[in-house]
Image (cartoon, helix red, strand yellow):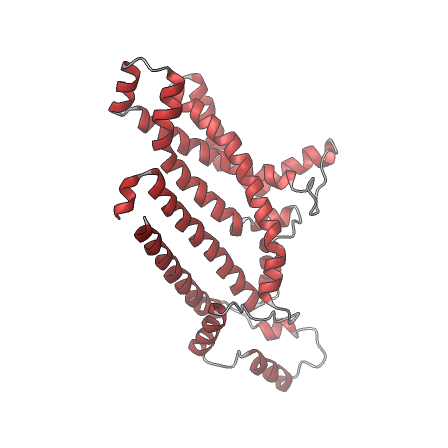
Length: 307
């Protein structure tokens, strides 16, 4: 088990390092000049002043040198300074990260609370009306854009009923965006839960357990659920990793002060360090969650410990 953990940690570190280098290269391929965007309305934006600004920010160096310097700083915990406000990128991201984490956990909680029971019901009632209804709901959940669903919920619960606020950072403000994310991803969780349970329920040991006279709820909860958890944990981990860094649209729809909203502002301002910092944080969250899933596999399935 220790060997499995060591392998996953080394793989995660190598992946994050590769992301840092690639983000440093790709960010310079984006059209536009951050200095020009920053000083577009400045009356002192002479060519000499702009050249001095580029030199101060290190943008006059070759790309490979900029990438090498940035990688070295990131490995020391320094994500650089924002171009427009000259503030530490790491500090700004850490200030917003708790809001993003709270929204991700809330959205995942809603998705699990709805998705797992629906998937369980669909697997048990396979081929019946309940299964069909759950699958129709799942298809609709996957097909409906999250931002459109968020606008519908705002129209219903905030504007018409007046139950919940539209924007802000309080505990009541998190309900609508969490519900939007939960409804969006509960369909994926339900489909994966259904597929995993159907596959497990067709195994020989399940038929043997039933033939021994075990009660159906014991067969489902004890003998079928644990093997199915491997597939369920996979999709849950990937959804949570995406929620940590990919809920950009929802954060902007509900004016939720997370790192996604900060990233959009940085993109509009051509703030290279902030964009790179967001990419690094997002990629690191995905890699860390994937690593934890792999380690969890070792506890759920002893065969994984030999890989």
